[in-house]
Length: 141
Length: 141
Image 1 (tube, rainbow over the protein chains, first blue to last red):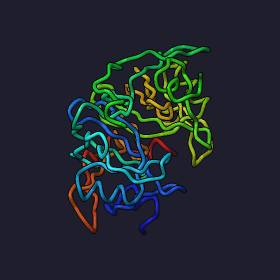
Image 2 (cartoon, chains in turn red, orange; image 1 turned 120 degrees about the vertical axis):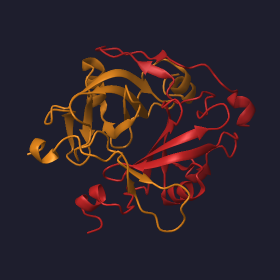
Image 3 (tube, chains in turn orange, yellow; image 1 turned 90 degrees about the vertical axis):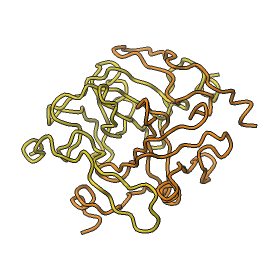
Image 4 (tube, each protein chain N blue to C red; image 1 turned 45 degrees about the horizontal axis):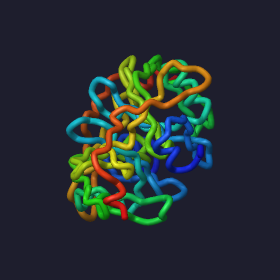
């Protein structure tokens, strides 16, 4: 029955459904604040290494490479919980973010701009929680 | 400068970067609990309608159709905040979930199974917060 919707949704078999590029979407939240820190992708290897090691690994679509979060910056993510969604094509990990932040722009979260709700036509972003917590230029040489 | 990394990341121009299929990834959290309710996709129309109406619209990749969350179930999502990520290819919305739940399987969240951290080799899921809050058979005819 593995692979059928009922088993994928209601079973306890771990059966991640990778997309055509071999990836699942990963949502990363801060275990303490609950804030979404980033959205990234994992291939099979990244997902397995994350489960085994308890530290977050991802797959970079732009660099076409496996990477361990924090390998350059030291800002590793300790994984406290991993959840799969109903159709097993998305993963939610709750992490303890080490160091000053998760975003390569130097902020705690990648989501530092809001779109005002209720606007028609032209939309402009507004900064929210956008203060830098580290200097990306000093970390990413 | 619109379209350059620095403008996309540091500017206030709303410039969503849709993928080859015309979609951005949307993470939906419960504004009250902070829990991730679901991960879905939005095309340009879904994103615009969500911004304008303050209710969540998505694009279904399987049905190839725009849909308003709750159009069948009545479980609409009132959008309290919309955030774009650094490279503007992911959206985080905080919602007030109306009705009994967000997941088509009858649960509050789509993330009702955990993967135990620290396991090598065979992995089995475990149910977590998996109690049904509504009967999907009664809602999705």
